[in-house]
Image 1 (cartoon, rainbow, N blue to C red):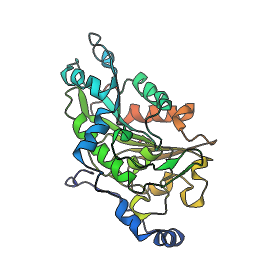
Image 2 (cartoon, one colour):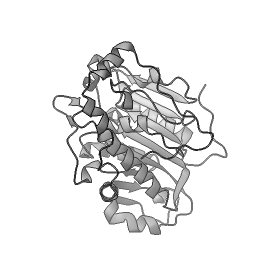
Image 3 (cartoon, one colour):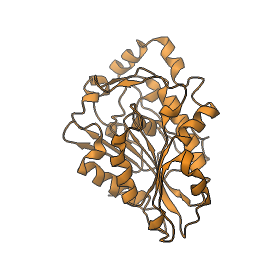
Length: 295
């Protein structure tokens, strides 16, 4: 679940909904409102499963040539990660997969982030014993399990707490990044202590008040990247991009790319935007002070 509100922290207030969106949301079944957080969302045993099933890639050799890099499943390498004592700390990306799970296609994302010098941990939501289906990739449709974002937010908070226990993780250089359903989660995460958030393959538009718009700390940098003609967002009520919800955020940018690619990190322009953002908010060599947003 989201972390308690820190003193003096400014949170995004979701704007008044457009009349058509509000009308549509009122037509949704009343039962839907009770599904945002199902009773199993934050069960400790289920959260442990998503953590132990996480894919890990840590380039220790970039900060300490005497140490070997570590990769694999968290269940297999956690002992090595806890024992590691490199010469300096590493920046880290907590990566949240989409509604089809942590499939082999995400090797592109994880390999790219690792090559940039970032440790990467990607929890596996499908490691849960109870994991309802939430989308269909063939019809490009979702929303089958309305409570899924409650699941993903709980997994995110749990993983962040565990990651901060590793002595080699720099707590000032942790970035939350998510693709598709993971992007929805990143857009709705309201915890603090992040260097930045990256929202991939999501528009921030949905006719359901609990998840509509962009939430979170107004001072935490945000990058959103989506394709203009993404087939997942053809219906008018999910079309658009996160840019219209960024008012009030100190450092936020929406990048809309030509084409229809949903998995945007396969696109060079998306990788370039992500690399530039990470280098600014969580550089592999920590700056003496927090960088200013671009003019």
